[in-house]
Image (cartoon, rainbow, N blue to C red; front, side, top):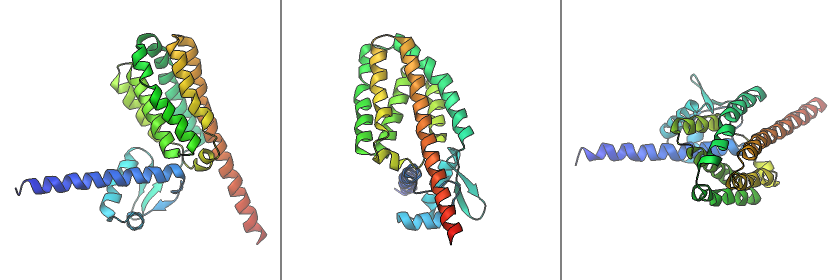
Length: 238
């Protein structure tokens, strides 16, 4: 009996760490945690109503994903993704995902592709509801499940890591305004092209889709720049 107790504690602690990590990722996506700002584990722990230990462990998980970086004796700084960073991540994803979509179009069965349609519908529903977290989670499942049909688990792991590192922050306003709906509907269109067996058209559509996501980020960055300029003008007027 005494041997089971520490194992149970470890399991509970890990579960709590994962819950905190997911909550922190959601806060990053919503823009509640700002790039460049340093957050301490005790402060975040107080906000989430947990001890500092699972928060610190969760932040270390996020650091391994490149979402935050540890700052000695202070806490963790949210990583700021530059335009160049996103361009490079998008380029790598394009090199992997576009030809893979073409191959899967020719090799996957109709049943395998149709199995992805409910997830594509979830993406659209989340976008229309302004549910950014739901949108990104369904989008992640769709893309990784689609790539998995190529039969290369390392490829899927690589893209999953790239998606984490290029996660779009602070898009809540765009989601609530319905700006993600067009991008969401592209998943259904991609499935239809793949089901038709047109590999070239599916590859071109995937190229357009990745570029569309990149455009959404650019729009958000422009909004942030405009907000900073307004703040500077207000400060200068005082």
